[in-house]
Image (cartoon, rainbow, N blue to C red):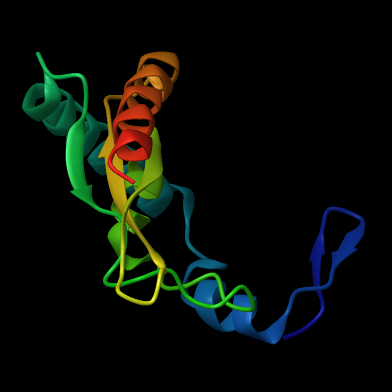
Length: 130
């Protein structure tokens, strides 16, 4: 089913993207609207969880940073992307071979600037640990 048309423009999608998005390409608007409502509910729940804190601290990845030819696995930040909340990773530790291990900071929707300031604070503390 490649290429797909959007309006009068033809979209050329990578086969990997078509495989990932394929089940959703023909979704009706009701299904999409229901998914958006669920996302808003989960955003509100996360906001309640994070209320009163500068950030929620989580592992950034399942292990050390991958080689520069690989972006790694997004499993640890996929949910934050889906919720549209800000998430930032600070390299906080190093493995025995010098590869960075990151600390992920996540905050409620709309608090991007405050999260960046908090991440800067963590980054400065990490720098003094070296």
